[in-house]
Amino acid sequence: MKKYKKTILITIFIKFFFTLPNLIYAQNTSFKKVFAAKTEEEMYNIYTQFIDSSSIYKELSFSYINDFNSNDTIMKIEQLYGWHRGYATICKQNRNRVYISSNMQIDFYERFYHYLDSLRQKESYYSYFLSVVPLYFLRRNFIKLFESGKLNREDSIKTLNMIENVTIKIINDKYDFTFLYFNNTSEYMTENIRQALIKKIKHPFYPEIFLNYYMNNIVDTSDINISNIPIEIKEKLDKKKLKSLANEYELQKKYGFERISKYEYILNKYYFYKEIGHKLGISPGQAYLNKKKKMYPYKGYLDINAIADYSGKCEDDTFILYLENFQKKHPDYKLRPFR
Image (cartoon, rainbow, N blue to C red; front, side, top):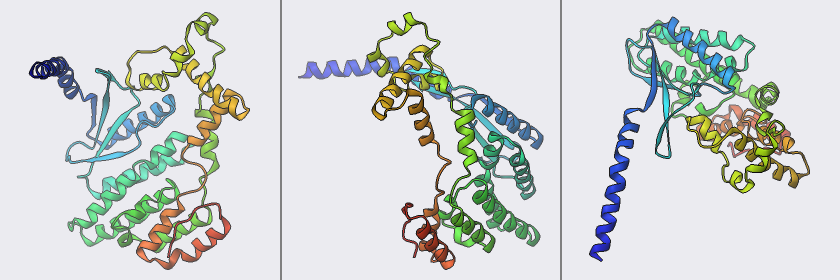
């Protein structure tokens, strides 16, 4: 028994010994590169690059703005390393973690708000979505400034107006009502914000232009196009092996490691959607498009339940009549109790 335990301990030690350098390497190479902007001009130039990069890679460069404390650096961008199966590997360039300083003055955040509004006006899918990503960052920092007790009366009034403006933009442009669950929401609820929410109850759907653009310009059907794969390669690749590689190539693209070929990836997806299509009586291509459409988040009903939850929790009777009408008009939507 003692000999058995000793063998286990030696085995664990050997595994740990040879794993340790990799663990240290992973910790010391958490990021590929760190970029910093110390002026607003530099920040806006970087933001323009984010839009270009998103257009090239057909996905957003980032989806959230983090706060960080700095008085001299406005924006910080980190390109992350991946860590996959014992190898430190590099993420593709379009994946970033973005930080903006939460130590700036109200005028900076106000200028940033207007800059984002100018992006929204451009006829670009990615300009639009990257213009709304920072809205929650702006809202919480305007609230932070207002609650700091350091503002004079004029700036306090300006900050309250900006909190209202940003919140309405979150409703109208981001189509997001998550802020209704925040603890301080009722303190900053205004009549204009209520009216913006009421309009969404009356028109409770995402704009179809989002889904149409996604399906026509972003969904890449070449992912399952096997017509360009040489016959000898098709015959060589084993179907059972291919099925075991589900999502492997996606990880490869994300983290940069080389483990399977693009041909294997395409054939794997083709056989996967061919099987789904066979069950539904449709082609592999149509099965693929149906799946992509189903997965797209900005379609169908808005989250009207968030308004219902707020109405019930905060006993705000403003929305009751409109929610009742919504319930009658849209019985297919599972509306939660709102009284």
